[in-house]
Figure 1 (cartoon, one colour):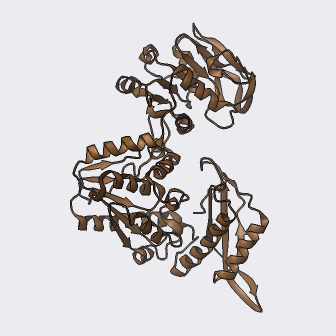
Figure 2: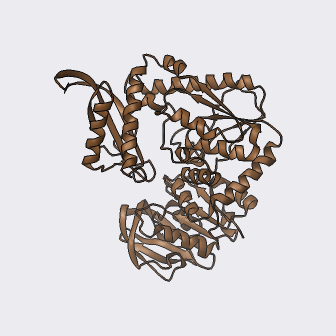
Figure 3: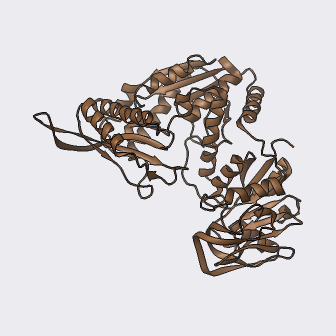
Length: 510
């Protein structure tokens, strides 16, 4: 069966999004749902397999999350991870109790290579543990297939029913053979073919958009970021001139970016409107120094400008949003903690006259959105665009934002990015940019004393942007960047490099 579906049941674990990403990286389509909707989704979508995620609870506590018992009678392969493994053990007659030896981090684990889950794995390897409870007795029909010093039942299986459980986290990179374990479950137990890709998704999405929109009109707020740009390309390919994309240029974009965005979409089959609102936005945040106040003021003004342009267009049938899957997951699923609320998940301009919302990217992760953009033929300058905050350079200027400071930062940031790319490091570094600090210091240029600004350079390596290390940029390259910025950008006499990891710092300064 082509593009088989795997159901991930969310018990509130911190790695739920990572599990879904790992499954999709293997070419298998999956979705995350609250554990309480298990039977509903099983009946509706007929999944090829089910994965129970981890979670913060103890299964023996009153009110602890548990799946409907009917899930175990659905004749579907199940993989329980951490708390999900304990749920399986507890509900099927095993025993879970608090552990005297708690395991956190890398742990040497012994595997039974006869288990289908550990096929082609070494008999001993490093796994990532994070638990205070442990399984002490396995349910009837199960056998132990892995163990560690603090978890005698590090894995168990009922091969006849195709139930598998692991106490560790195979989805994190610290578990050396984790991706192979997940693949063994998907291919061996679930009989998935690993044939899901962006080309098939694109064809299906275009068909669904055409069917839903019909001859209606669609309005899109185009920020120029990866998500909204890919959405604009997808909608243009699907419905052409029925789409109007409004690009609100708030003046806080990087050097030449507004023109690049306009140029990138000039030949697409859509109605493209660019609103140059730089003076308006700069006036709105004049004298504001607090970063959160800047964000709120810019966000509110963006909605006001968009509303005004929408009214000129008149009635539209659909408002398109670039919501992606992490927005949905991070805004709260089931018992999962809300990491942060996203503007695309609720909170819409109420003065725009539309009937429905369409969110064609809502089931995709960021890396999948980029792949979709490439499949659609979107320009590399947009597909490969680095993460960029909505308020733009306004929150890369520490303190008050002025026209002079914007010009300084745009030029300094451009030089830094240009030199990184010339050195061929753009693909290795996750994010790199310049910050205009509020620090002014004494310097000497020629025979003259100066008292000018300090530019901070920030470059990080990261796989998920949840943690990050500072990039080890070669000293000669840093020297060249510093020399160019001080020599070519007026009112800058000092350049520093931020060597702080995340945590304790964040990637952005504000």
